[in-house]
Length: 487
Image 1 (cartoon, one colour):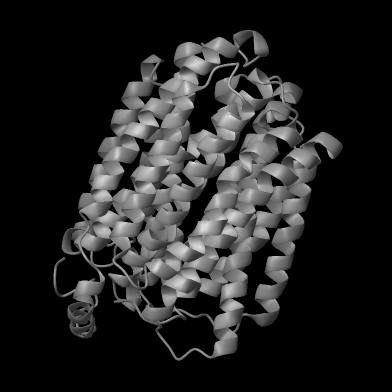
Image 2 (cartoon, rainbow, N blue to C red; image 1 turned 180 degrees about the vertical axis):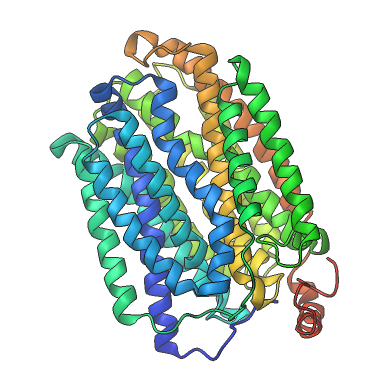
């Protein structure tokens, strides 16, 4: 099982947790606050539903593409180095987004911000898992995930308030300020690189193949209604398959595919994360449009309604992380996945006459499920591998999350293309939008049912802790082994 790679003092652990949780707050805060601002951005730049979706999706896709490479680079060159430069780029991209004169330049700035997000997300969780022992890791991860959910909670309300009072550009200004604070604390307080010190070549061709293939697959999936979409999606899927084969054959892969083949707990944790985020990411996007376009709420009022989901996530995540240190994480995470699906299924009943309280009730159930899933799933994955793989696992779990988020948005954009056919989303087209949204909710709820089964089938972590510790000792003599004993 993963354990700190060096002796870590209590003050160093505290500073690592502060920096990681600050970064964990700022990224979801930006994502959730921008979701509230999307209708206003669409009106200013006269964007249709698909183009509007790309403002959110470009960030997610760029982050997903770069997470695995930066996870590997952080193991080679040091996590603090990658994390710190990611913060610098994040602040610069936020300022560029605030000043964007057109929708397409805003999308380009969001792509740069996604690259910086990969540098931050691919290292921040690894800082925590490198400094906390397995018995304390669940609590620390619970705090970190809580920061994520507090950011998500503050985003809709603050984003709606700023959009209504000062315009959507003010959101990016605030994000730049938060990023600047995190950068300052990192430079002044975070000591050392906190890296296993692995020195190995970086496989540039694999990184390029992975990025191009993933972009091709996601872009093709969102454009299946056009002739080139199916070809791009197929080419992307084939490229990802070639990437996986290549990673098995080279001595220093950027992604140890063997982790999935040798380690059942890690493999099923990654699959559960992919399914969970594929089913949930577009929900806030769709409900933001529903509340403002169909129900006629202001950005601030819509933000207050959407606040229920991340508030429940923030409330239940520390409890879930603490509980997963004492009982099998798969039981807690699977219950969370099931409740997530139940919350999403409640949105199948949405009509223009649905009371706002009904939307809030569904978000409460969804938020509880989300909170019960995330930190136990992370705890299971990190507890199943050795310390030298922490950076790769952090990047891989982040990739599952961001790839899932991107897939979810790609499905939503595909449904917009099918039902709205390039038309802007206006109150006059509310009924057509609702058909597309309800179709997305059907797909998401079904995915949660499958994900709950995947989560349950991962196997036990606590029951095999002693065996894992013995395997970790053996793995020290075999640098490429995630575990001497398959799970």
